Image (cartoon, one colour):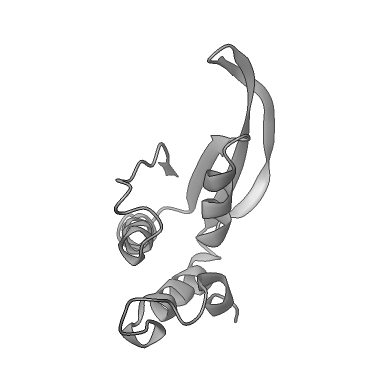
Length: 119
């Protein structure tokens, strides 16, 4: 399964709800549908997308060079994935991060997602 072309309203970008939306989609893919692999691909020049993939627990797999010509330039595409054997640890991190006690009353996170994903 591949998640792609994620576009959130500026009001939703970088929010707890946006992270939870990704978590719920991953739960559906792995826990309900039984997928073995969940992919994220993005333009190598799209640094925010690359950072989002890593923050959400995806592993960088490599770059497909000159995969296409897009808007008059040669585009390289970065590939990221989460596989089923990694999912339990990634899922546990999401659940710890999304817990109410990880947020202050004003909604500020206490601990970062990647820190909560560690075993």
